[in-house]
Image (cartoon, rainbow, N blue to C red; front, side):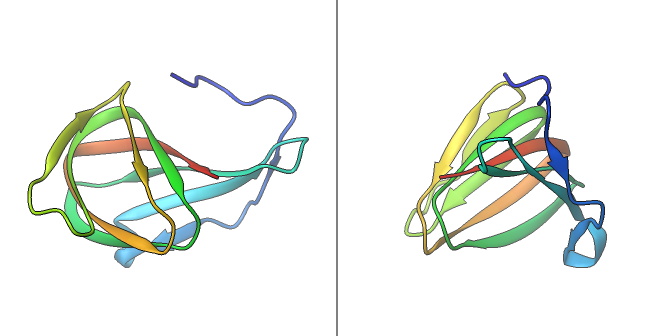
Amino acid sequence: MTEQFDNVTVTTKANVYFDGKCVSHTIKLPNGVRKSVGVILPSSLTFNTGAPEIMELIEGRCKVTLKGETTATEYTGGQSFNVPGDSSFAIETLETLHYICHFE
């Protein structure tokens, strides 16, 4: 599990989605790789993706249904899931969810 990023650039303006239920900050690593670090409050939301993503869960608990699937999979802190590009996923956060979104 990722615990910290060193020598990064942080965008100070937050990315606020779904009336504040999801808040993140974009970080850029020295090699130019972009990630976001954020929190999703307990809620049921649907996110659309442009590029493929890996959602690394730091803490919390959620159920995720990827586009085209009918069954939700439960994840907890310390786990991750992949989301294809040009897709979507529905997420039900059962506890406040701390995450890192790794863009591929």
